[in-house]
Length: 145
Image (tube, rainbow, N blue to C red; front, side, top):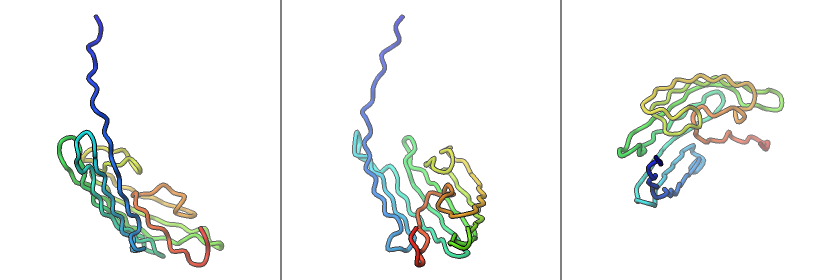
């Protein structure tokens, strides 16, 4: 007996818009809109990151569509460390908390999961996997990166 025919759904087309480090203030804005087959807002995000010497803090709030409903997500991190220079490799220690994250950049996208993180970095932080996917470049103090 042959398998029943599969019903194909229309492809989903999305348009993302992202602003990273707005006016060099560390603010991130992101929106993802679905334009086909049905126009709707898929995701809205606002975030902030500050990476100084020695303090690093940041967080983001995300509202996104999962199935037929909109749900919320939040992440935050705090840590301390030093920036890598020619004389010193730099180090950092960072702790984080994430809840209901839709992205799988740093961890699996598990609905309603709380994830605690702890990261130790020796060397340039830019080479480590981001503890939270926020972009805030370190201040360039007289040398190119």
